[in-house]
Length: 305
Picture (cartoon, rainbow, N blue to C red):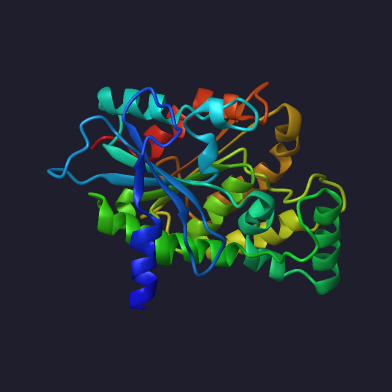
């Protein structure tokens, strides 16, 4: 165990501003952050202006961390504008002072790391096999990769969060620990909240990819997600959930599935105080669209007291 801890200290030495341009604050990169559960990956930590040891900060974990801060380094030239939006909301005293932990995705393993595992495993084996075949045909699975989101969550909860809490000035309880993501990142954020309600106090699930695949027809995946939510949603008096979706491109698939999720939320006692679902007419499935509305889930999850 001591050797593992030393490995973390050596491999995860911080690199300030490593190839990341931000408008405000600073990004600390822990390159090739190691794990016993998943492949190593970069972790980018955004610290707000004035970050110092005299304060403790709320923490927002965000999936697809390479897409958050700097469009000059992303595959599509887009970004979430997290630093701009966070800085503005903090300066306007609309949200708590917060650091953002941007966890890079696993590249070719992104889909199998973000696909909620327990709902998948609840499906009959033949349907599981058919899903793997579809993912392989779409290049989302090399054929030898199994759904491994439980391992990804173990990495977040058992390795990354303890490291962040030990090395940064954080507020550690679930009331100050949140998770967010879009598309498949929205699914894994929902799953993290349900699997680890003692760790995460809220989740922002943006353009949540309820189909799991890329078609709504003859797709058993959404029903598995719905059944999972019915059995595993956290306590609505202590947890908050944000959902949204657009109506263009891939988001055009989401409305009927989100309506079913909304019914489950009502049945489980969620109200406007701890849950919101928003529809954004004409908005597409892209970082550009998510950046335009990021302020909404941030204010919902992290309101200044």
